[in-house]
Picture 1: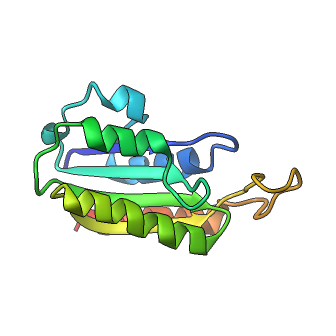
Picture 2: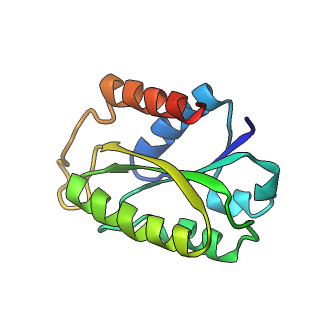
Length: 147
């Protein structure tokens, strides 16, 4: 199964850690949204979209990529995120999933875990996340996508 993972990660590189774990299981090509514009999504059997959660949303670069890309209807996709707050992640996933479904994507799975977050405090919250348990769950999720 040929897989592409398009992700945005900054600050603490939480999402990149998860993307790399999933990529190892899925043998996926990893790209950022700006680099992904050169990829032909129709060449892939599965595409993942991952982001940190920024004030209750996936990063704007992912929205821009999905809106501008020529992606065939029915394309199988999955979502993943790292977040300081599970409630923000739930809202972000609902919104992003809804946009994908409106564009005709087939969302086949979602994963989210806590990530170290310093958006509201320099000391941060969720220090040490994603941890080994989070990464193990990410690998397990990725493995389930192969079925």
